[in-house]
Image 1 (cartoon, one colour):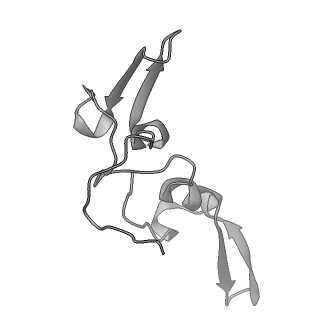
Image 2: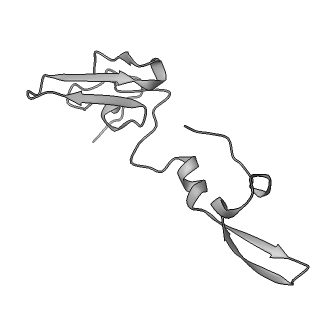
Length: 104
């Protein structure tokens, strides 16, 4: 039987969340122990420990909201010409776009 403990002590075997975070700058040296991590969410302060949980974590493997909006196609209808079709979001004027809140 397996149990999941909420709020317990983090395992030392897990890698730091910073390694996959969009806001982190990670510098590796020649040795495994040579590593500098600076967090953009903390005014580029150096992170000196492996992070197991972060309230501002943003996975760089997933697309940000800005990137999704940039590649989106918008369905538009033109009553005057009786046409319906898709338009690239980046081809629309700023006033015509529905802008979502920024997730950085």
